[in-house]
Length: 245
Ligand SMILES: [Zn+2]
Image 1 (cartoon, rainbow, N blue to C red):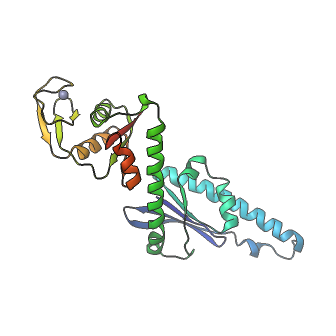
Image 2 (cartoon, helix red, strand yellow):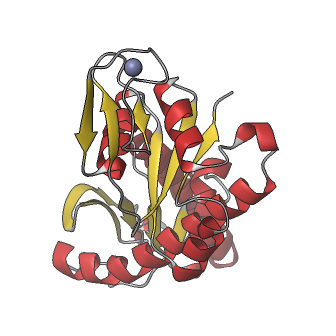
Image 3 (cartoon, rainbow, N blue to C red):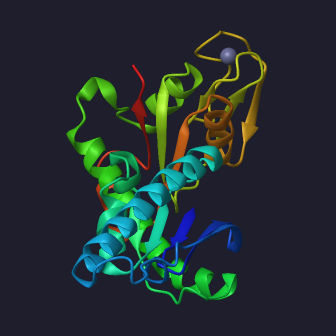
Protein backbone atom coordinates (compact mmCIF):
# COMPACT_ATOMS: atom_id res chain seq x y z
CA UNK A 1 0.00 0.00 0.00
CA UNK A 2 1.19 3.47 -0.90
CA UNK A 3 0.70 6.29 1.64
CA UNK A 4 1.02 9.95 0.64
CA UNK A 5 1.20 12.74 3.18
CA UNK A 6 0.93 16.07 1.40
CA UNK A 7 1.39 19.61 2.64
CA UNK A 8 2.57 22.90 1.21
CA UNK A 9 5.73 22.65 3.27
CA UNK A 10 6.73 19.11 2.26
CA UNK A 11 5.20 15.94 0.88
CA UNK A 12 6.16 12.46 1.97
CA UNK A 13 5.55 9.05 0.45
CA UNK A 14 5.52 5.80 2.40
CA UNK A 15 5.07 2.16 1.53
CA UNK A 16 3.30 -0.11 3.96
CA UNK A 17 3.95 -3.81 3.49
CA UNK A 18 3.07 -6.65 5.88
CA UNK A 19 2.71 -4.33 8.85
CA UNK A 20 5.91 -2.29 8.37
CA UNK A 21 5.94 1.26 7.06
CA UNK A 22 8.92 2.74 5.28
CA UNK A 23 9.40 6.28 4.00
CA UNK A 24 10.50 6.08 0.39
CA UNK A 25 10.38 9.63 -0.91
CA UNK A 26 10.24 13.18 0.39
CA UNK A 27 9.70 16.34 -1.67
CA UNK A 28 10.11 19.83 -0.37
CA UNK A 29 7.22 22.18 -1.09
CA UNK A 30 7.88 25.31 -3.14
CA UNK A 31 7.66 27.61 -0.10
CA UNK A 32 4.83 29.19 -2.00
CA UNK A 33 4.19 32.14 0.27
CA UNK A 34 7.90 32.96 0.50
CA UNK A 35 8.23 33.27 -3.26
CA UNK A 36 5.68 36.02 -3.50
CA UNK A 37 7.67 39.14 -2.74
CA UNK A 38 6.60 42.75 -2.98
CA UNK A 39 7.11 42.57 -6.73
CA UNK A 40 3.77 40.75 -6.92
CA UNK A 41 0.84 43.09 -6.35
CA UNK A 42 -0.99 42.28 -3.13
CA UNK A 43 -4.30 41.54 -4.90
CA UNK A 44 -2.61 38.97 -7.21
CA UNK A 45 -0.82 37.06 -4.45
CA UNK A 46 -3.68 34.75 -3.50
CA UNK A 47 -4.48 33.84 -7.11
CA UNK A 48 -0.82 33.19 -7.86
CA UNK A 49 -0.26 31.17 -4.69
CA UNK A 50 -3.33 29.13 -5.56
CA UNK A 51 -2.07 28.44 -9.08
CA UNK A 52 1.35 27.38 -7.75
CA UNK A 53 -0.29 25.04 -5.26
CA UNK A 54 -2.35 23.48 -8.08
CA UNK A 55 0.75 22.97 -10.21
CA UNK A 56 2.51 21.32 -7.32
CA UNK A 57 -0.51 19.08 -6.63
CA UNK A 58 -0.49 18.06 -10.29
CA UNK A 59 3.22 17.15 -10.13
CA UNK A 60 2.65 15.18 -6.92
CA UNK A 61 -0.25 13.31 -8.53
CA UNK A 62 1.89 12.20 -11.46
CA UNK A 63 4.65 11.20 -9.02
CA UNK A 64 2.09 9.10 -7.15
CA UNK A 65 1.04 7.35 -10.35
CA UNK A 66 4.66 6.51 -11.20
CA UNK A 67 5.49 5.19 -7.72
CA UNK A 68 2.23 3.21 -7.53
CA UNK A 69 2.90 1.55 -10.90
CA UNK A 70 6.54 0.85 -10.10
CA UNK A 71 5.81 -0.77 -6.72
CA UNK A 72 2.52 -2.37 -7.85
CA UNK A 73 0.75 -1.09 -4.74
CA UNK A 74 -2.76 -2.39 -4.15
CA UNK A 75 -4.19 0.55 -2.23
CA UNK A 76 -3.47 4.20 -1.85
CA UNK A 77 -3.92 6.29 1.32
CA UNK A 78 -3.91 10.05 1.24
CA UNK A 79 -3.65 12.78 3.86
CA UNK A 80 -3.70 16.35 2.51
CA UNK A 81 -5.08 19.80 3.38
CA UNK A 82 -8.48 20.37 1.67
CA UNK A 83 -7.34 22.67 -1.16
CA UNK A 84 -4.34 20.45 -2.09
CA UNK A 85 -6.49 17.36 -1.74
CA UNK A 86 -8.98 18.59 -4.37
CA UNK A 87 -6.27 19.73 -6.80
CA UNK A 88 -4.32 16.49 -6.30
CA UNK A 89 -7.31 14.21 -6.84
CA UNK A 90 -8.25 16.09 -10.00
CA UNK A 91 -5.02 14.76 -11.56
CA UNK A 92 -5.18 11.16 -10.34
CA UNK A 93 -6.16 8.37 -12.70
CA UNK A 94 -9.57 6.70 -12.32
CA UNK A 95 -7.83 3.52 -11.24
CA UNK A 96 -5.94 5.25 -8.44
CA UNK A 97 -9.11 7.03 -7.31
CA UNK A 98 -10.93 3.70 -7.05
CA UNK A 99 -8.27 2.42 -4.64
CA UNK A 100 -8.01 5.60 -2.63
CA UNK A 101 -8.73 6.05 1.08
CA UNK A 102 -8.32 9.17 3.20
CA UNK A 103 -6.68 9.41 6.61
CA UNK A 104 -5.47 12.01 9.09
CA UNK A 105 -1.87 12.39 10.26
CA UNK A 106 0.64 15.10 11.15
CA UNK A 107 2.96 15.92 8.26
CA UNK A 108 5.97 15.31 10.55
CA UNK A 109 4.67 11.97 11.87
CA UNK A 110 7.07 9.02 12.19
CA UNK A 111 6.61 5.91 10.03
CA UNK A 112 5.27 4.09 13.13
CA UNK A 113 2.63 6.78 13.68
CA UNK A 114 1.74 6.67 9.98
CA UNK A 115 1.42 2.89 10.23
CA UNK A 116 -1.01 3.13 13.15
CA UNK A 117 -3.15 5.80 11.45
CA UNK A 118 -3.15 3.86 8.20
CA UNK A 119 -3.97 0.44 9.69
CA UNK A 120 -7.59 1.28 10.52
CA UNK A 121 -8.23 2.76 7.06
CA UNK A 122 -6.55 -0.19 5.41
CA UNK A 123 -9.08 -2.44 7.14
CA UNK A 124 -11.97 -0.30 5.80
CA UNK A 125 -10.51 -0.41 2.29
CA UNK A 126 -10.22 -4.18 2.51
CA UNK A 127 -13.89 -4.49 3.45
CA UNK A 128 -14.86 -2.12 0.63
CA UNK A 129 -12.85 -4.24 -1.82
CA UNK A 130 -14.51 -7.43 -0.56
CA UNK A 131 -17.98 -5.89 -1.00
CA UNK A 132 -17.17 -4.75 -4.53
CA UNK A 133 -15.92 -8.22 -5.36
CA UNK A 134 -19.03 -9.89 -3.98
CA UNK A 135 -21.17 -7.48 -6.06
CA UNK A 136 -19.06 -8.30 -9.09
CA UNK A 137 -19.61 -12.04 -8.55
CA UNK A 138 -23.35 -11.47 -8.17
CA UNK A 139 -23.69 -9.28 -11.22
CA UNK A 140 -21.31 -11.15 -13.55
CA UNK A 141 -22.67 -13.09 -16.49
CA UNK A 142 -23.04 -16.81 -15.54
CA UNK A 143 -20.27 -17.75 -17.98
CA UNK A 144 -17.82 -15.37 -16.31
CA UNK A 145 -17.96 -16.97 -12.85
CA UNK A 146 -17.50 -20.46 -11.45
CA UNK A 147 -20.52 -22.14 -9.88
CA UNK A 148 -18.96 -24.44 -7.28
CA UNK A 149 -15.68 -25.33 -5.60
CA UNK A 150 -14.79 -28.02 -8.13
CA UNK A 151 -15.56 -25.78 -11.09
CA UNK A 152 -13.34 -23.07 -9.59
CA UNK A 153 -10.54 -25.67 -9.27
CA UNK A 154 -11.08 -26.87 -12.86
CA UNK A 155 -10.95 -23.31 -14.21
CA UNK A 156 -7.83 -22.70 -12.15
CA UNK A 157 -5.93 -25.62 -13.68
CA UNK A 158 -7.07 -24.50 -17.13
CA UNK A 159 -5.56 -21.06 -16.45
CA UNK A 160 -8.93 -19.34 -16.87
CA UNK A 161 -9.09 -17.70 -13.45
CA UNK A 162 -8.66 -13.95 -13.20
CA UNK A 163 -9.48 -13.67 -9.50
CA UNK A 164 -9.80 -16.50 -7.01
CA UNK A 165 -12.04 -15.62 -4.08
CA UNK A 166 -11.97 -17.72 -0.91
CA UNK A 167 -13.91 -17.52 2.33
CA UNK A 168 -11.13 -16.98 4.86
CA UNK A 169 -12.57 -19.63 7.19
CA UNK A 170 -12.97 -22.29 4.49
CA UNK A 171 -10.82 -25.36 5.10
CA UNK A 172 -11.00 -28.67 3.27
CA UNK A 173 -8.88 -31.60 2.23
CA UNK A 174 -8.78 -32.87 -1.33
CA UNK A 175 -6.80 -34.67 -3.98
CA UNK A 176 -3.95 -33.55 -6.21
CA UNK A 177 -3.00 -35.27 -9.47
CA UNK A 178 0.80 -35.45 -9.69
CA UNK A 179 0.52 -36.07 -13.41
CA UNK A 180 -1.51 -33.08 -14.64
CA UNK A 181 -1.55 -30.94 -11.50
CA UNK A 182 -5.35 -30.79 -11.24
CA UNK A 183 -6.97 -30.36 -7.83
CA UNK A 184 -10.12 -32.15 -6.70
CA UNK A 185 -12.58 -31.50 -3.93
CA UNK A 186 -13.28 -35.19 -3.46
CA UNK A 187 -10.90 -37.55 -1.69
CA UNK A 188 -12.56 -40.68 -3.13
CA UNK A 189 -10.79 -40.92 -6.48
CA UNK A 190 -9.05 -43.96 -7.94
CA UNK A 191 -7.91 -42.15 -11.09
CA UNK A 192 -7.69 -38.54 -12.21
CA UNK A 193 -10.94 -37.38 -13.91
CA UNK A 194 -8.90 -34.96 -16.04
CA UNK A 195 -6.00 -37.07 -17.39
CA UNK A 196 -6.95 -40.61 -16.36
CA UNK A 197 -3.70 -41.29 -14.50
CA UNK A 198 -3.64 -42.95 -11.08
CA UNK A 199 -0.75 -40.93 -9.66
CA UNK A 200 -2.90 -39.12 -7.07
CA UNK A 201 -1.99 -37.76 -3.65
CA UNK A 202 -4.28 -36.71 -0.81
CA UNK A 203 -3.84 -33.11 0.36
CA UNK A 204 -4.96 -31.76 3.72
CA UNK A 205 -5.21 -28.11 2.68
CA UNK A 206 -7.09 -27.65 -0.56
CA UNK A 207 -7.20 -23.84 -0.21
CA UNK A 208 -3.42 -23.58 0.18
CA UNK A 209 -2.94 -25.78 -2.90
CA UNK A 210 -5.41 -23.65 -4.88
CA UNK A 211 -3.65 -20.49 -3.71
CA UNK A 212 -0.30 -21.83 -4.94
CA UNK A 213 -1.80 -22.73 -8.30
CA UNK A 214 -3.43 -19.30 -8.60
CA UNK A 215 -0.11 -17.55 -7.96
CA UNK A 216 1.69 -19.74 -10.50
CA UNK A 217 -0.95 -18.84 -13.07
CA UNK A 218 -0.84 -15.14 -12.23
CA UNK A 219 -4.40 -15.03 -10.91
CA UNK A 220 -5.26 -12.53 -8.20
CA UNK A 221 -6.28 -14.07 -4.86
CA UNK A 222 -8.66 -12.46 -2.39
CA UNK A 223 -9.56 -13.88 1.02
CA UNK A 224 -12.94 -12.69 2.26
CA UNK A 225 -13.18 -11.91 5.99
CA UNK A 226 -16.14 -9.53 6.30
CA UNK A 227 -19.10 -11.51 7.83
CA UNK A 228 -21.70 -10.12 5.38
CA UNK A 229 -19.46 -10.92 2.41
CA UNK A 230 -18.77 -14.40 3.71
CA UNK A 231 -22.46 -15.21 3.99
CA UNK A 232 -22.99 -13.84 0.46
CA UNK A 233 -20.29 -16.23 -0.79
CA UNK A 234 -21.83 -19.09 1.19
CA UNK A 235 -24.99 -18.90 -0.96
CA UNK A 236 -22.94 -20.44 -3.78
CA UNK A 237 -19.54 -21.75 -2.67
CA UNK A 238 -16.73 -20.88 -0.27
CA UNK A 239 -14.28 -20.89 -3.19
CA UNK A 240 -15.26 -19.00 -6.32
CA UNK A 241 -13.59 -17.54 -9.34
CA UNK A 242 -14.01 -14.63 -11.73
CA UNK A 243 -12.91 -15.94 -15.10
CA UNK A 244 -10.73 -14.48 -17.84
CA UNK A 245 -12.79 -16.32 -20.46
ZN1 LIG B 1 -4.44 -35.70 -13.81
